Image (cartoon, rainbow, N blue to C red; front, side, top):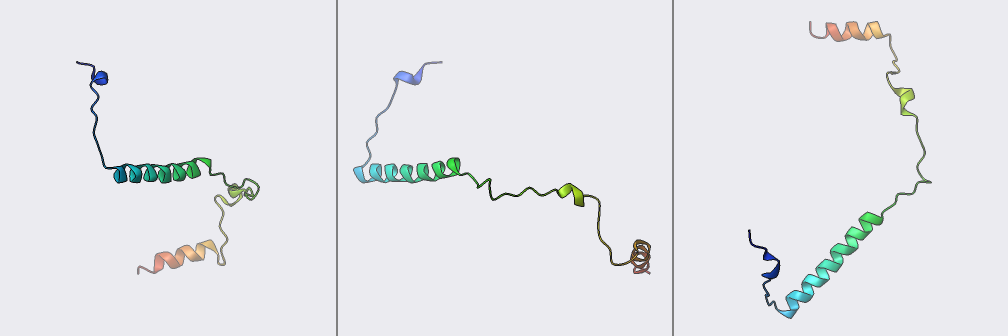
Length: 75
């Protein structure tokens, strides 16, 4: 396979299009820099122990009564 490194092609575009592309590139770079440098405030985050809720629920009724009501609703 031939090395295309030395076969560069030059194209000409209007100056306004070139300046528009540069302006667009600058805007995109600003957005990328913002995203990359974005740091959420670590101080504002409070740690929550969600494992204490794992597998537990609070019921107003007896669990057996709830099961009987659910089974009886189809009859």
